[in-house]
Length: 104
Image 1 (cartoon, helix red, strand yellow):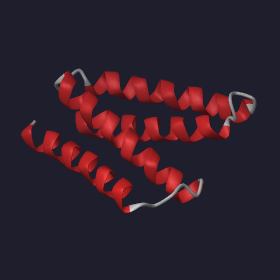
Image 2 (spheres, rainbow, N blue to C red):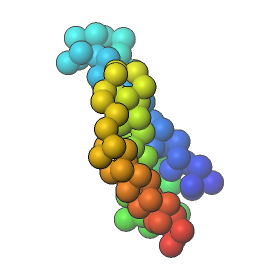
Image 3 (cartoon, rainbow, N blue to C red):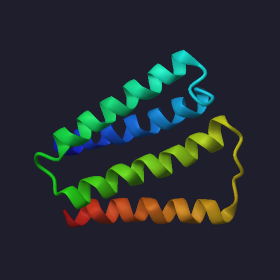
Image 4 (cartoon, rainbow, N blue to C red):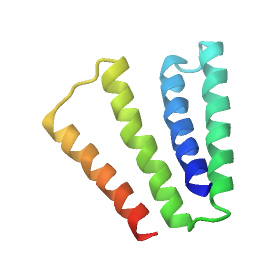
């Protein structure tokens, strides 16, 4: 279950960044609240996963999911550029996350 909680935490991190962007500098109250709730849920599920997983592995995977996922959300929803270099570096992050999972 720890890996499931970590996946939920990473997804919560992505959601928090997505809503943070939509909050427009905390001026949109609805998205501000969603950003805060998402971040709280993300931290909660990360902390639950840390009961069974090594901190370095869990944190690396959590930030990897959050980073790569947020870049993909930016491309899909905010029309951010899709450059070959960006895609290659996202793949590096994903490779690192998979590698951490494999050695744990």
